Image (cartoon, rainbow, N blue to C red; front, side, top):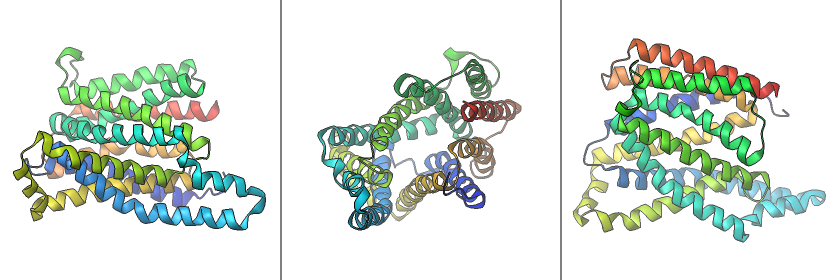
Length: 316
């Protein structure tokens, strides 16, 4: 890895994980008048504003490289203009529509499941990522990884069911979150296809994704909700929560990409596995949620399983 830097990679990974750990807490703490639909809309627009300068800076850098690097000018020209291809426009549309509804489902799940269970349920992403990586990109999965995927799911189920393992009695919010994790893992896999073709770049995807979804949700909001709800947008207390989630979500994404610049994805994933611990601390402090022995043992099992899965992935 040419840009490997342990200190920077560790710093960005830890800070990004801390921001992610706060997302369920911010969502649950918002005033009840802020429904998930409008919350998703405004947060997406705030994220688009955050990523606009990042996108423009990266585009300017690519444009400069295109002008000054003649041997690779075709590569950089493709990065600048590849988004215009029909398949990439279709990809942007799919990503924009999907991420219009994924945040809404996340906020509904957070509200129902609670912060600690939400953070634990989100760790199923690694299981779906391995499965889709195998199905779409033909990435190898060995028996050890499969075994630890089952152990990871066992840890999640132990925690969210409080040891009962009664799937039929699971909190509906946990089920919504696991389904949502499956959805956005599919979209991330599709995005990876576009990125690997070097026809689009990451900040471009994040900016247009949020701009599209924010506009789509705002423009359709009043079809389903009364016009008087426009007052929600101008209440100073509500604005604080819009900004908190938008800044948190936006900068956690930015820090994720920065961490990838200096660190291997396996190490970032392992550090990210610690988010339930941070969420448990903050949710106990701010929301008064109880962190039980089942949560503790489940979290330790999840962290151990993720470490073993990623170690096997690196060895493969």
